[in-house]
Length: 117
Image (cartoon, rainbow, N blue to C red; front, side, top):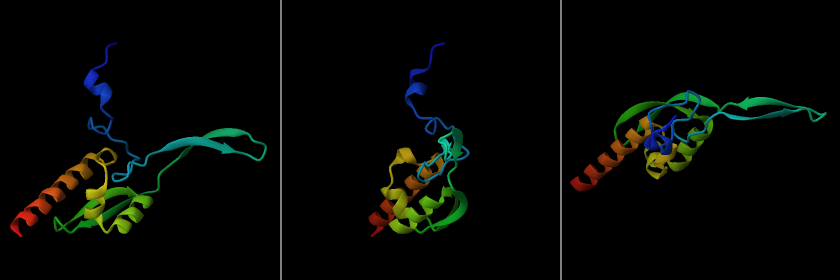
């Protein structure tokens, strides 16, 4: 079975596939590990991200955006000064397709306002 070379090099998110349990802003996803008992018996388990559906406001676009993000991402958004600042500072490979689109829209709007001023 031959694999498509383009498909093999691109991550799943870039191909349009998405993970239901993945943060749209930080990329945090399900991890696996072990429960370890006092007798050191190990049983497999899954660590699920603490995902919340939230509405964040984009000041540049002047609209609210509904995203499914982790509690850690909410703290990071607040720390960086809002959704617009978070997206402009974050790397594109961590973001979901929707978040990448938002980032491009915010950058475009920022360029328009800079050119108008």
